[in-house]
Length: 431
Image 1 (cartoon, helix red, strand yellow):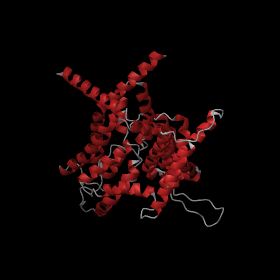
Image 2: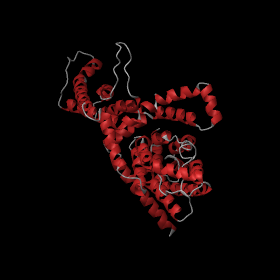
Image 3: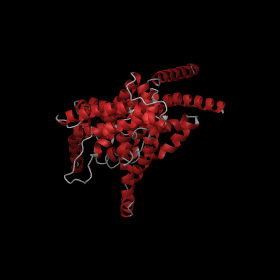
Image 4: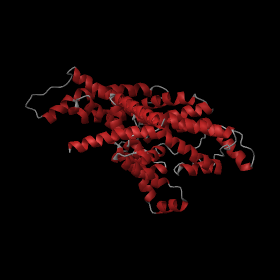
């Protein structure tokens, strides 16, 4: 019986690896994933800046504020993760050029994409002639990531089509290749900038005001229509981690919608809690937390992984992930765009959390959330948030739920670890 179970587990992992191998051949996914991998240092530096800047201890906060450290950390975060869409607009187009084999124009493609991204970003022209132009930072960060990816692929395809149909300025062979390559990029870059210049003019006349707002609205409205109920909460959680899987900051996109739908219910629960009255709402946008995404995978990896890459990334990412900074593991493992982790990360963990919490409330093993500590505990370990929101019962059942999610991750982590082991063995043999 035991051998059958082992055989079935191995068969399941082989199936996962087979599916992953097929999906990994998708060029679009590879381009986006590799672009995010190139940004790993940016994410790690910005993530640690956010971690040290957000530790919720009054004495510590007073110290870093008085010493000027908080300002330094805020500036680092703003110019790393806070500008991520700007960098992404360059890197996705850059990787597009390399993937589709017109790498002699890779930097020109990336720069053209970045410029097109800025062209469609609304800015404020000062009245004084030499005053600086003001750009809204919101579209340069997480809110503009969808736009950045769409613009980058559009620009990349313009360059690819121009190359395919030989639409370029040709210089004599005597001209050095470095100079000739830049003239080859001149026409596709001009086409792209003219196209997005026209798009910017068109959208400026609409109620959206800009392309960014239109794309953001088309994403947000369907999510807002889900409604403030249990199934709506589950779908929002799945979409949140689904966006993260695609490399988009799910919390920035879905978080405001969750707040909008459930804020009134949460406030009513909080008011009742402060007066000692029974809490009126079972579903108030809350669920037992298991961290902000990567910590269950890290624990599973520390338990079962044998490859050096998986072990080192898990060890390095553990402390940041425990305090809500998941980017080192999201991009370093990677979890983003990795088909092996789609089921446990996007589907499994939110399902266990949302419906598990609801069942515990229904049978009386967990009280309703008083919603007094959720925001304050956002950057603290998951068990702290569960204790603050649900009391001792939340602490206990949150740990049980976390253990269940870790066990769920194990076969998927082992499948990925087997891939890494094979790669490491091949590398060792080549040496």
